[in-house]
Length: 203
Image 1 (tube, helix red, strand yellow):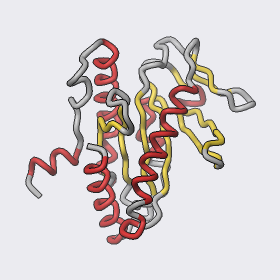
Image 2 (cartoon, one colour):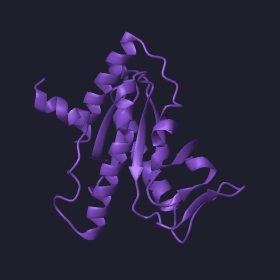
Image 3 (cartoon, rainbow, N blue to C red):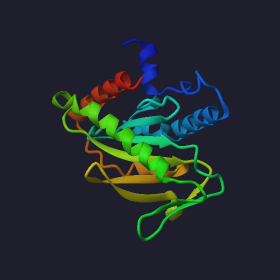
């Protein structure tokens, strides 16, 4: 593998907004770059990070695909431009998510369906990669997030209970580092193979 390919696997930005550089797309590109910067320290922990990856039909809706060295899951992180800058994001006792005047359930739905798409792709490679789980994270820039920058909600989705973590951008690395990572030479190899597969599948 040449050095150019390695650079692309280490992280890619600037893919967003090439075809439709309107203000919303430019904002999405800025959010994607900001989240990529927040996640970058995870590389020192052995994580593989792919940035600005369209998952699904809408190329403006981009995600970060994060693979820990334990290779037991893929964390799908989404940037959503819909968080109001002055909102305080919180959850009530019934599990409802509040974000000012915004309908945060839109972002929840998007990231769940993106994770489904990633999961279906991984399912086709189960023999080679093994069973790899999924986690869904919504990163927040600008708005504040309750409980020290982290709100967790659960939704029934495709006949299973799914966990979605809404995380202040500055708290992303600390939250990601709570993922258990029992690492062996074999898991490192699988994590790299998984990243290569995701890189090709979601270019």
